[in-house]
Image (cartoon, rainbow, N blue to C red; front, top):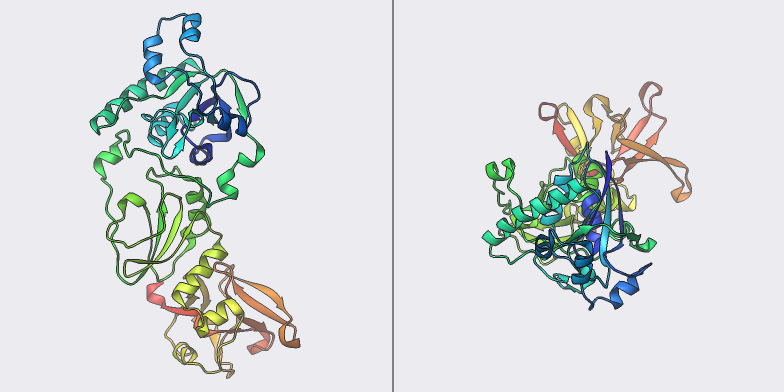
Length: 419
C-alpha cells in the first residue's frame, strides 16, 4: 500500500536526505506543516520561529479522551516546522521502520531546536495520515523514551498529531544536499537506538590506523540511512581494488586518528598517512574527482607517473618501470590507482619501442579519444575506472593487429596466481 507520513527533525535538508535512502521510499519532499497560517514560505517560518508550538508527545498522552474543541483551546499552533513528506510502499518498508528511524536521527528531547538550530521551525514533530501510523508513533515513542531515560536524557517533547496540511518548500530546498553536498547537515542524533538482533550480537568495532597510507570513508551511524553514501559506494568504492586500503566506518568507530576535518557530513572521505589526515572531502565525489585526489596522494604531484596520468604525459623510452615490466611472469597489468585490470601478459609483445606494447586491452576497461596534440592525430587510450591517461593505440602491431603503446609508470603488475 502506498502511504504518506510527515516528519520534522530539525533542518529538513538532512531529514530529506536520510529518508531518501530507504528502499521502498518512493518520494521525499521538503516543506512546512504544523502551523495555523496559509501558504508559509521559508522566510515566514524564520520570522515566526519565536512563537508558540503545539501538541508534544507528553501532551498527546494527556489529551487522550479530550474533545477536539478542548484540544484546540489548549494547544494552538502559530508557526510551521520544517517537515518532510515521505511517500512509501508499506509492502517494501514498514511504517515502524521509518518511525523508529525518525526517533533515532535526532534528539526528540530538545524543545524548539535541534543543536545550534534554534526556533520552533526546527521543532521535532510527527504527523500521521492513518490510525495505524498514530498507534505505532505513540508505541515507539514510549519505547524510545525508556531508552533515552536509561542514557540520562529528559522527556520527549515531539509534537504528534494527524496531518492537517502540508505545503512544499521552495524549489531550491528540494534535494538540497544532492546539489550541495557540502551543505549544512549536522548529526543531531543522540546515539540512542532501538535494540536489534544485529546490535545485540555485533557491537561496533573500533577502527584504528593501519600505518602507512589508507583511505577512510565516513558513513552514517545507522547503516543504510545515507543516500549519498550508497551512491558513492555504488559508483566508486565498490569498484575500487587499489593497493591503498579503503575502509568505510561511522565516525564514532574511529580511534587513534589525528583528523581536523569535521565528520558530520556523510560521506566524508579521508586520505590518511600513519594515522594523520593528509586530505579530506565532505560530501559525495565523482569518480574522476576521487581518483584525481588519490593520484595526488599515491603518485605524488610532480612525479613522472602523475604527469602521465593527469597531464597526458609520456614515460621516457626504456624507463626503469618499463624494464621491470617488460619481462614479468604471466599475469595482468592493472590501473595503478583503481586496481582494475587493463592488460594481460598474454597480449604483450616486444615492439622494440621502449614502451610496453599489447595487441588488445581487457574488455570494457579502457576507452579511446582522438588526440590532436603536437600537430598529430592519434588515438588516446584512457582507463574507464579512474579516467587516467594510459597511452595510445597504433595500427602497426604484429600480423595486422593494433599496438597499444602504454606507459608503464601508471600500471601495477599482479601475477596470474594472485588474480
